[in-house]
Length: 450
Image (tube, rainbow, N blue to C red; front, side, top):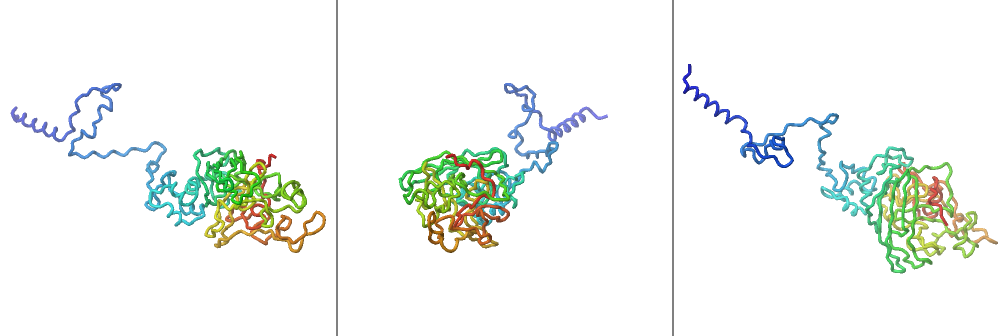
């Protein structure tokens, strides 16, 4: 048998080994904070600062993902070195090629505008001359669930049709030149404002414009002030007055078997600066003073306000005021797009009363960027003379001086065509200037109330 002294030595050695290799002794009992029971989990946890300085913090054991969720779903998506996360944008990385196409620019131009990571959407939008909302729509399109007759190329709306939506923070678009070719009115949902100067009176106005979507329609609300200076020729009989205008168009336009003719009972379109298009003049040869009073659509020899032979007191934007002070366009607004830029197809600048988009003048004709040509041509010879007829040669003074000759230009009878699967109207240098008729059904909100 071992002696007592040997047993004591053995026990001392074993005890020392246990103390050196075993777990640290439990911390001294502390008084629990108010509202916490002694012995709770929070009290027993050892703070990181209390761990021995020479011992590394043990790695945390991997946690099992919740039921129905894979570990891959829990991972945080990290930006690619070539596609940094967008500052101020939604999560996920954009398809820059598709975004550039939607904006009508090259992918290289878009990358240069985005700049080094992380890019700033507000700064990028200013560089491209568009609104931040337009840039968001291009970079992060939301897939639309319904079928749209004018979405054949897969261009997607940022707003599901029928979903009520609006933006309350207004974007300043003073003198903005647009760049996006997105054909859905839902892609322009936002509030906009700007300053504009009446050059003749030297008075500054503030314009306001809002686009909303509700129950399958886009709703345009405007105070009737354009986003550019106006009346620079000093020819307005009536000063511009703020209005309370509201127009609606279907977000899913359909072309009818037969077009609907223009009339004096309907306004024709709303542009994206909140100004309406009202192409027809209420003036005919031999009726009143020739400038006003001709309200019957069957009356011949209606003057064309865009003809250089007529003087309707328009400014450099081919616009003037109606007797109530409503500013409106009769043709190319000379705003919203660059009429001299043939480097890229023109953007969408507004929407017709039937919901189809209105583009500027340029389109991509199999790799060649050029202006769209209307299919209306001047008649040859001379007008009839005598009672009720103006006589003289067909020179474009009257809308009756033109005739539609199918195939003589790029555009159809309504001044529209399909490009890349999208039907739209085009601004042209000659009659009918923007719209010749409605390919779809005009919304009743465009019916004139006076």
